[in-house]
Image (cartoon, rainbow, N blue to C red; front, side, top):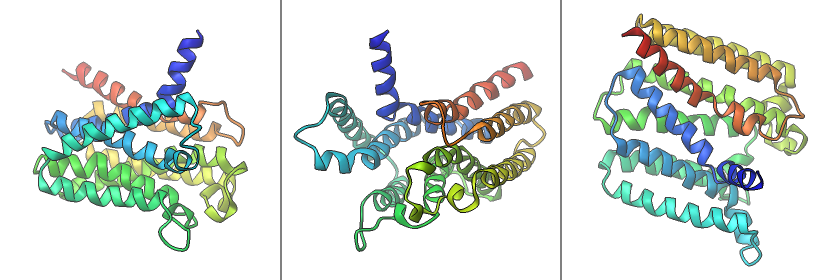
Length: 274
């Protein structure tokens, strides 16, 4: 049992879970657009998420305590370095356009984590955090797969981008509600500015917008609509139930798992439609 707890903690803390979540969103893009997305994209997204997230979370800690790192953090460092090396191999075989987009999103992540002006980074800019994360997630899981497959970024794709952006914002809100007790007020997160109840209300409105997008994006495919309704309702329930005091893995596992469940439910309804 102890081994399983250690393994699960590594699964969460090493960002493998969030990498699977982001990769699941690429799968949803494939089902939504009907494109055959290359396994290289899935590899790029999975490895890039681990590399980027662990850089944001641990770069500063590793720099300060590199001689006295706990075993678990050392293991995460080694794992992250391996993922970064594999990511370089994937990027080496990627189209030039993908390298350009990847560089843009990578720079955004870098500026989010590393102070670049008077000791401040993008995370320090009040109220900007949630929108940066949502932009990167939506860009990596919608724009990059479409560009990789050399498809046009038409109005439908940008609507999918908007829906993905809105959903990611909602999925981040339970984290921001949880972290209210620890975040500096200068961060200007939505719960800090609006309060918990109003933040939840905004989230519910955004979920309504995401559902409206789905009615257009599904193009009459009821299996997509059924899955979207179920998962948007689940997202709303998880948001409404989120509080300042949460279980250890309420946000970092259960809320984050919604895209994985969404992919599974969508695929299930797809099979039933045949």
